[in-house]
Image 1: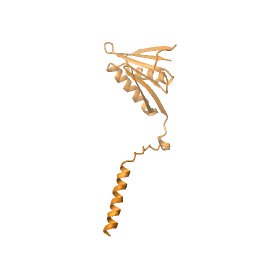
Image 2: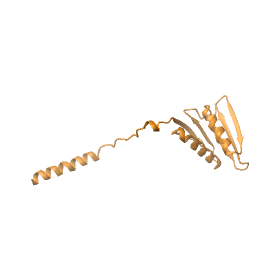
Image 3: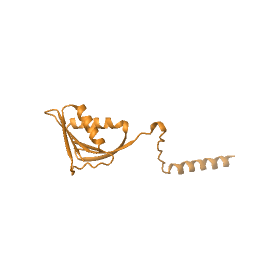
Image 4: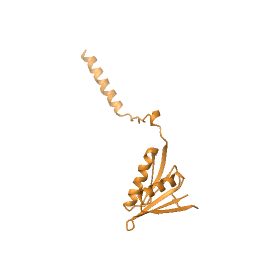
Length: 135
C-alpha cells in the first residue's frame, strides 16, 4: 500500500509540474446576440503620437468627449474612424471654430462619420475650439 501511495503521489507531482510549464490558452469572450454592436477602428494622435484602438458604437461619444478634454488641457488631438488616414495631405479642408464644447463635439462627430479626419485644438486665451477636418 505504501508503494502504491508513493507512486500515485509522485505521478501527481510530476503531472502538476508538467502542467505548470504549459502555455496558457487565451480565453476570448463569447459575444451573445444582445452584445453585438458595430466595432469602430479608431486611429488617433495626441501631440503627434499615433495610437489605434477598437471601440463599440456606444463608446464613440465618450471617446470624442475625451479628445475634447485633452484639447482643453493643451494637447493637439486628431482622430478618424475606420482606417481613415490622419495625414493632412488632402484636397479638402474644412475649419470650424466655436466656444461651445457641445458644438465642437457634434461637429467633430459628424465630420468623422462623413469620413473626415478631425484635428482639434483649444485656445486657452479665447476659450475657442478650432476643429479642422481633412478628407
